[in-house]
Length: 286
Figure 1 (cartoon, one colour):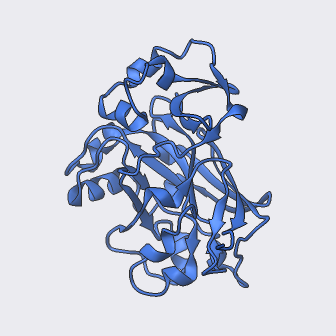
Figure 2 (figure 1 turned 45 degrees about the horizontal axis):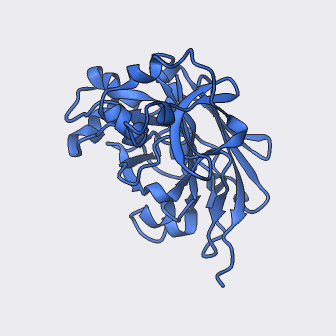
């Protein structure tokens, strides 16, 4: 299934993508669940699977996309320098353990929503990634059991303000400006993606490919990341792990390739779909 969170401008809901339409599961379930996070926490994906043959209630073109898990309570764990080409282009050595930092939910927008370059920086960079969404609580999970705890996968753009990222050893400032990253366009459940390593990720800037890599080239693979993260925190249904970006980021180029107003970034993963966002400058304060 492709599961979407959206707003009509009047209300927010969630549903199942069917062709160019949406089965509005939130409305059909009459408010039983506030969002997809609650569906996952209740282990209720089968309720949604039972709706797959129903007619669409809305057109995709009639809604605004939200991140698949838009809840502010969501833990968003991001992994840095996790593909060898990216490790090399950033001038680093392969890490002994995964490099993990956090993003806040309000730093992310959904598909087709503008990503905002803040007025404090011009060193705005794209980072296409695979996002893993947890479906079942996980603590100290061994790698060989890790994928049992996954609900599905989505595209992720870990938009980064490089000058703020480099102001100190902690990356949080450069990763959390409001609406500076993106997540979507929807969540594809694991019954459609048995092995995330079989996927291929492509990032395009204004239609030109700037990143292209097989997920199999992750330095720490998805099961290892789930095992590691579930050691230091309880992964709850709806939590997200962004697994890292391939080589080809703007900061690794000579001269650097920064993104700004008028640009458009696409992160596409075969078997999932395409996350596309225009880039705009933050409006002047009035």
